[in-house]
Length: 74
Image 1 (spheres, rainbow, N blue to C red):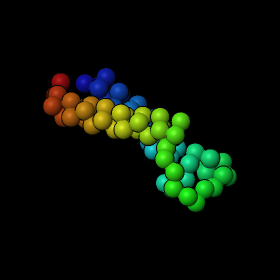
Image 2 (cartoon, helix red, strand yellow; image 1 turned 45 degrees about the vertical axis):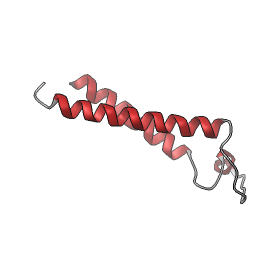
Image 3 (tube, one colour; image 1 turned 60 degrees about the vertical axis):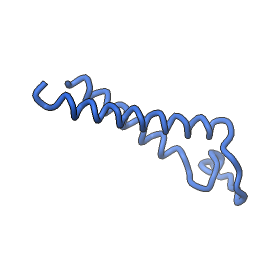
């Protein structure tokens, strides 16, 4: 059980980092001072970061459910 909780904690930190690296309405360049006002699609690192965020969220949810099923007694 403690292994599941450690894995869940690591995934939670990674998920928080992935979310904080994204900026709504701005590209990755917005974090470094670049600014765009026109809508554009995700490309390159932004697309990869978005997909990584989705994968981390799904893994964290599955792991949370596994912790719930195993329960605190195991």
